[in-house]
Amino acid sequence: MWTKNHGDHDYPFVEEQEPVLSDYKIDGEKATHFVNHARKTCISL
Image (tube, rainbow, N blue to C red; front, top):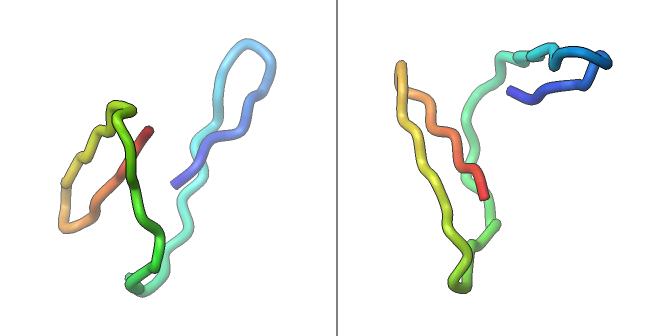
């Protein structure tokens, strides 16, 4: 899921796809937020 700015609001977009493992790594001291809902996980930095 991602959002696109439409001036006075953001519009959410959702693309259904099979989950895959990524080599993406989060390091450091910056706060990170994980949300798990309906068997899907969102990570925001």
